Amino acid sequence: MRLVSLLLMSSLFVRGQLRSEKEFTLTAHAELVLLDVSVKEDKGRYLSSLKKENFQVYENGKLQTISQFSNEDTPITVGLVIDDSQSMRSKRGDVINSALAFINASNPHDEMFVTHFNDHVRRGLPPGTTFTDNPEFLRLALWNSPAEGMTALYDGILDALHQLESGTRDKKSLIVLTDGGDNASKHQMPDVIDAVRSTRAIIYTIGVFDAQDPDRNPGLLRRLASISGGVAYLPQDLTELGEICRGIAKDIRNRYSIGYAPVRAEGNDKGSLRSIKVSVIGAGSQKLVIHARTSYLLPKRP
Image (cartoon, rainbow, N blue to C red; front, side):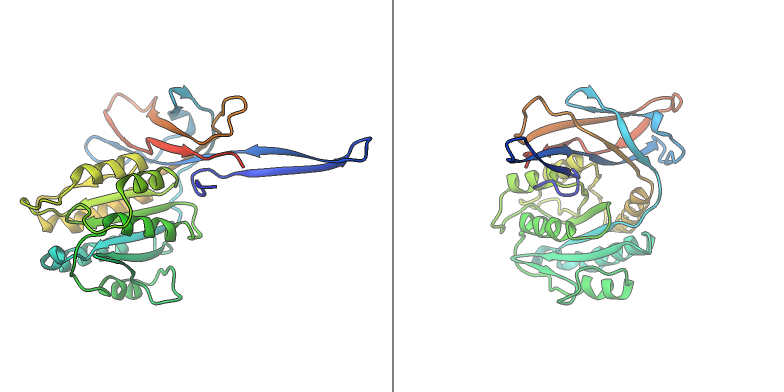
């Protein structure tokens, strides 16, 4: 099943004997879509006291019944995906310091990893260490790759999503820091879009672009963030990176978890693209900023 984290599938198998003594199997499937949702006032203050009744979730335009709800600051699995192409050399210190700012502002029990990409994808932690909550190990992992070569952005994100799925935490996020579009990957953009739609992970993207960079692709960064329910940042100055990364850590720690069971059409065993819209009601008249996943791929029923 492709959508391992977003859709939690369970099966109940009941076996018995017919009068003809032929064995039969009765199978029932239960599916659950889990969303992580942040809600802020337009001035930036998080609304942390909302109840289940304040949320409405629509899938393909139809109102869903919320069956699970919580707003606890629970540890997550998170990957830092760092562009180490040659064009990032002058920005390297600012990028790593901002990543350390994110680590220091996060839940101390988060399990983290580092993925580097330039011409190739490299994992920052030592062989045999998939995740860690040790800030010193993460600091060493962030410095564990030279800034050289081209930009295999798609390959880097796909490798990080694969590693993310082996994490032990229910909530999962990626933070992608890059200064350009892709010019070296074996995979293509549709591969990345499908993978993002097939996971529960929230993706935050930070584009540290040079004004004249021909490979810059802010549209892709915005799209990845929008699909997954994250946020895309396009700072004008490197001095903004630390505050952005601390803000991402705060956003992760202030998210509501909302679950519902999607309804399939009768006999629909095929996978399909589903659109999602989350709204908040009964929270006063102030304008709200809501970040939540906007689509996912419903997997084929096994």
